[in-house]
Image (cartoon, rainbow, N blue to C red; front, side, top):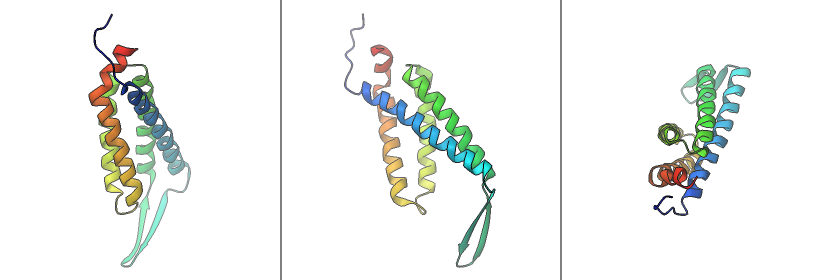
Length: 133
């Protein structure tokens, strides 16, 4: 019998696992769309025309998406290693959102805020899931 007291944040760790799985599914679908669809993306600017290849971006999103789904499932199962890997992946997600601030500022701020909440829940209260389970 455990003598430690769990807090209401245990539910937030479960929330973090569900969010990781949801974001992973979205990211994997985006990656598949980038790989299956046209591989060229055109951007018209004042100074000219940019041609970008989205194949690498598609593979990155597919791989990260699958990793997020697997880590989210392991986090829900109470695996300690999943907390560490989830934090690393969420930090990478926040950095990616920072790179998108010029293109989509509001979406990036929302993503970063959710990432910070997930990181806090996993670092401060992640151990309680294993003790509570």
